Length: 91
Image 1 (tube, rainbow, N blue to C red):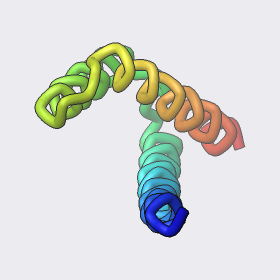
Image 2 (cartoon, rainbow, N blue to C red):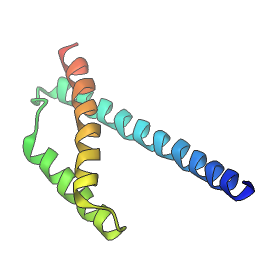
Image 3 (tube, helix red, strand yellow):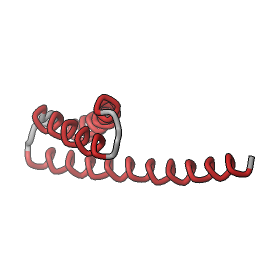
């Protein structure tokens, strides 16, 4: 059981880092939304969304992750970013 507890602690630490990184990414998205609002740039940039998903799927594949998993993960992240961006842009 000691090994299992060690794995759980390691997973907890990775989860904390992962959540911090997602929060940091969304904070940058918030700044982008504010800039778009100030400069009259439309919220949705479909070509950028696809570019990010494709790039991250490639990065994930290089780390042994399934492309479909990474694309699904980034769909969730981008959906949240868009929700926040819309709130900021619409004021």
